Length: 328
Image (cartoon, rainbow, N blue to C red; front, side, top):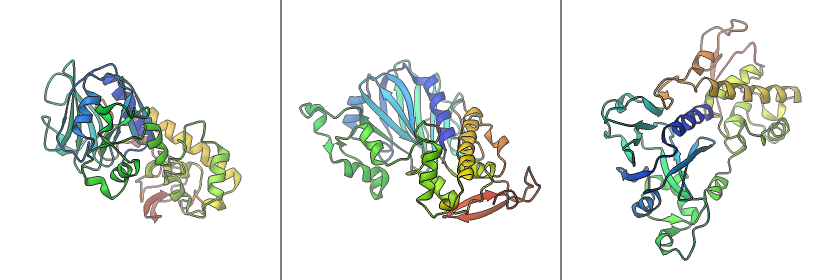
């Protein structure tokens, strides 16, 4: 799954391609991916102009002139493709570039198609159908607006659809939940490049937990946006073994880990993300962060510092790559 630097890269690239464009049509080819009511989707999106693109953790937020936001999560195999003049992709791809996506669009993995007034098309492709799109009002829906209130239902029902066992059901109606309240309901921790993420915050978070530090870094309720790649790289740079108990870290180690987290994420954004597998930026090219990884997926290769072979272990159900000599 793309991590913070990859989603940030897609966000910036997508903004260059579609901000300022007006939606002329939308086609839902598979309702699991975009499970809002079809009538609501058309009512909110048609003639809406894209005014900005933001991001919260790994969720893309496409802000519309209608005071609504289209949230997009790529998950494991989601992909956004911008095509301006033909049915064949011209290189504007963001997300996973699976082999099965190649060729003319739409294809059997195309879930949603947006057509803009200048004939530009935005395709949402998803091989495994784990990704999703969802509309959120930026303010509570006016209860007197009968065009929208007929779609209302409870927030808990909708969140269960997106986050729990109801993810495969068609969502027939809208909850009266704003974008802000939805993001709050996810209970995401601060982003590691934000002002809310400080050394003191990381220290207090670590002191509360006796789980392995690698596992703590992956918990989105503590810190949002970090995944396997950047957790491994941050721990290597701070010389901390992935199985160390979080509440056993010394203050100096916390300080080094804090700096390392910010360093590797900023480096990941600078180099356009990591393309170890299928990830591509919105120009359709690979990121270059994989050329700067020091431990991730380097099992058996010599450590760049001490030449000890890099090891791979399991901790908290996830893999971890580390140097057994440098990291203690």
